[in-house]
Length: 429
Ligand code: GLN
Image (cartoon, rainbow, N blue to C red; front, side, top):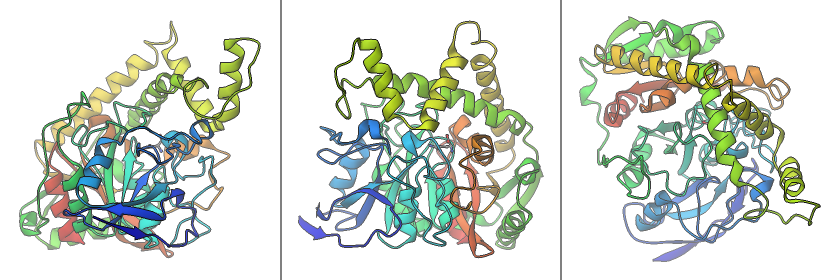
C-alpha cells in the first residue's frame, strides 16, 4: 500500500475531477496511474456523467471495475470528461466544457470517452477506462492516436456504470499500446453476479503475433462507402495490406445491414435513454431545487435546467419512438434491423475470423464543426455502431495519419474472441 501525488497539469480539460493524492495497493497494476470515465461510480469521488444534473453527486459505492482496479493495486487519479451521459462523438456536449485533442488542440478528441483518450494521449496516465455504447471508446482512440477496446457485451460487468443505453453499452480499456490494453482488460473482465447480463468469461492472455499466418480477415465493401474520407480509406487499406504481408488472407465481403444499422442504433439508444434518464427527478440526485407549486413543475423545471440540449433532444426522440401507436413503426423496426446486423456478422464470421475497416470515416473534427448539425455528427458513428448492435468485440489501433491527424484501424471479432482481435492488432502494431 502507498499513495502517490498526481501533479500533471490538465491543459486539455481531460478531467472533471482530479484526485491529487491517490492510494494504491499491490498487484498486477501496483502504482499504475489509471483514469476512469465519469459515468463509472467511484465511492467518495464525485461522479457526474458530464452533466449538471449530477454535479456534486458522490456515489456511496464503487463500480465492479473500480473494485477490480483497486484490488489490482492501481492508483485512480481522476474522473475523465465525457459527452453528457455518453451522448456524443466529440466530448463537446459535456456540461464542464469540451476536452481538446492533445495531437491538435484545435480539434476534438472524439467522444464520448474523449477525456480518457486525451489523458492517455497527452501522457498524463498510461491507461484509462472508457465506455462504448456506439463507438465511444473506439472513436476517441482513433482521433487521439491510441488503442481502445470495446469488449464483448457482458464480458465486463456494468455494475456501477450509470446507464445510458444498457443493451448496447460496456466498459473497456484504453492505452497507448495493445499490450497495455490487454493487461487492463485482464483486470476488468470476468463474471459479476450483480450484473444480470454478465458472462463468465475471464480474460488472461498475453498478446502474441503467432496466429496471424492464415488468419482470414473480411473487409466489407460498406466500410469504405460514401462519406469515408479517401485519405482515411487509403491508410486503412495499407494497414490491411500489411496484415496480408504478415500472412493473413484478405477476403472482400459485404454487409448489407449497414444500410440501416445507424437508424437502428439511434432509435434503440434514444428509447433506452428516455427510460434510463427518468430517474433524474431532482429529488434523489444533483443540485437542490427550490420548492415549486407542484411535483410536476419541480420535475419539469429541474430537468429543463440541468439537462443539456443533446440529452433533452434524445429523451424527446426516445419518448416519441416508444409512445403508443408508434412502437411498431420505430422501435420494433429498429429491433428487426438490429437482428439483421447480428445475422450479417454470423454469416461473415462463418467464413472469416476478423472483420477489418476504418474506425471512423474521417479524422478528428475541428472544435465546433459539428455542434450545430447533430445529424452529421450521428452519421460519423456508422462504422462503430454495428459491433454494439451485435454485442461483438472491436478494437481500434492507430494506423498512420492524414494531415497530421491520427487514423484508426478497426478490427471486429466473434463473441468472446477478444484474444484474436488483440493478437491481430498486436501483430500490426
Ligand atoms: N456517438 C454515439 C452516441 O452519441 C456513441 C456514444 C457512446 O458510445 N456512448 O450515442
